[in-house]
Image 1 (cartoon, rainbow, N blue to C red):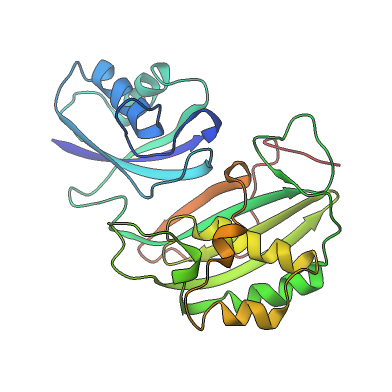
Image 2 (image 1 turned 180 degrees about the horizontal axis):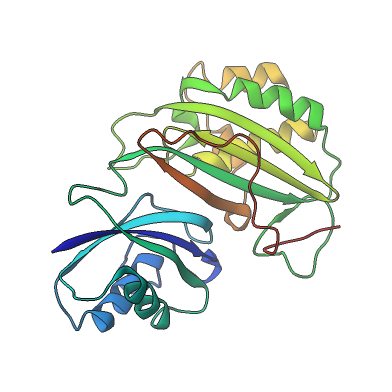
Length: 262
């Protein structure tokens, strides 16, 4: 058996998230189907670095594949891609250490959330269109409150796999270009729905409907306010997963051809 590291991009619009679910179309399920064909039903292991929600996209999801095969990495990539749906693509396959685990070995992750400030015919499933005027200065100040090692219990739902709601958020950067706002968030890991709820809070501050003091109060104890303000899944992208001594990149790295708003 050999182990491989896969870097993957996908449009999550048609899928009920990453994790395989009976009777549901998922990203992982699509890989299971493709691998069964490529490896002629040979036993294999396939795990992703994180479970993205339904409708969430990825520029650089990472997975590991363990299988006994005579195919080289390039052939594995081509074979899997030939059997995947059009909206999932393997960017790279490389030989990995036999103990490499896509999820457990991840040191940090970064997400991008895209907000459109104008109506767009092409981006409904890829951005959150907000009609209200947003105060970026206030959003940037609120972003600093969301940074650091904190208890994000108010930013997630109960999850059997979550043992702690404390997360280290390295930074929350906000970038604006023409009619597009990109929120770039990097941290040790993220809880279920956490990034979408952080985004919802930032937008509420930008609208002038939430004060900075109210954002501070979200970390004093549990509040259901972030749940009520959860941003739509379509604007969220898993940008990159970092391993070992890799230094997370500061600033936005959005694939230009994915969505251009002027």
